[in-house]
Amino acid sequence: MFETLKTIVAILREKETSKAPDKIVVSLADLSILWIRYNNSFEPAIPKRPLRLPPETGRTIEVDPPKKEVPDAASVEISASAFYDEVIEPYRILLEQDRVLEGINAMVGILKEHGGCPSIVQHGYDSEREEVPRIEEILSRVLLRDHTFRTTRIAMQLLSDRYGEKPVAYVPVMLIAGLGHDLGKIPGFRADGRYAKADHPVTSAAIVEGLFPELSGTHTLSVALQAIREHHHAAKDQVGMMLKEADGRAREIEIAAADKSGTVLPVTEWFDAVEYMDRIGRQVNVTQTGNAWQAFSFNGTVYFEPGFLYESAQEMALEKNVIDIELLRQSDRDAALLKILKVLRPLNVLGDELGAGYVARRYEVQTGQLKKKLSFTPFKASAFDDHGRFEERKKDHPPMVTGIKAL
Image (cartoon, rainbow, N blue to C red):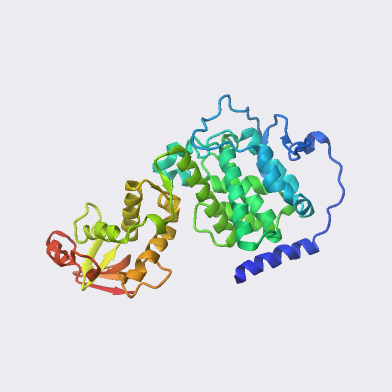
């Protein structure tokens, strides 16, 4: 709460102290790069134009519109005009006062003209593609502009739900973050040597920064850029967390549209604690190729690797045809485990040393003369129906643990 108040105060203070920029004269040709002219319905009416990289690159890349757009079987097409009328137009005066409308219009224009590409990077390394191998093919059929408009719409709804109907201080920040979070996936931007191998959140942040030169150094732009950079990692503030959540919800909608057999459900509705305990219990003290620490018992406690618990939940969800983005996106592992442990905690199955709000604890494990520091999630051995067989399996489960203590 304190961080939220600090953010609001900082943004409002900027608005009170900022002065209108000196009047300048520019040609329509120069202005058309960032300015979108509107017809009576406020639909962006933009001529074909080049994509411009941030000024420091000193380059302009000519990009032709896709000859054939990616099939949109996995998403419902979102009209740029409808999106603008619903999400941006209600805040036009505020955005003009905060000097962000021009840049926001530019992002909408870029997405309308160049957003017919896949919503996932197709070539080279990218953090999102690496963490969602199971759904990469589905996401490649979702258009970038549709995904971006959907994510921004959901993010603005989250903002309204949590801060009231008019969360004035956060509106410009969230619109910039939502519309800009995936701009780095556009092939034209990635064609530049500087961004060819960059992770798309990094590229997106650099592009957005170049579209808002008048906000350079402001708290508004700094918060938006941080949210963009972190939307596939652990977010550190409210804007980043809401953007990450909105991105995940949008993906769930897109996956459900493509996979008619799957159902989007929260953990509380599909997770079966008894079935889960039976599933993970069968692997205690069972030798695993390349991983001797997956699940082992010692002195009445079973120690599980968090990764194993996460994979077990993934398998359960897959068998039940449940769509849960937190079980499909590796960066959400801890968030998913927290929800699962929250369901299990009232059943008194977790080790007493695991504090609330934690998914694991560090331990020092001793095997003979060797000591290792590892992270495990402790469970009470007595909570498993077949715990009597745990010791029998140990003879086939190296290494033999001779001591373990919480750190």
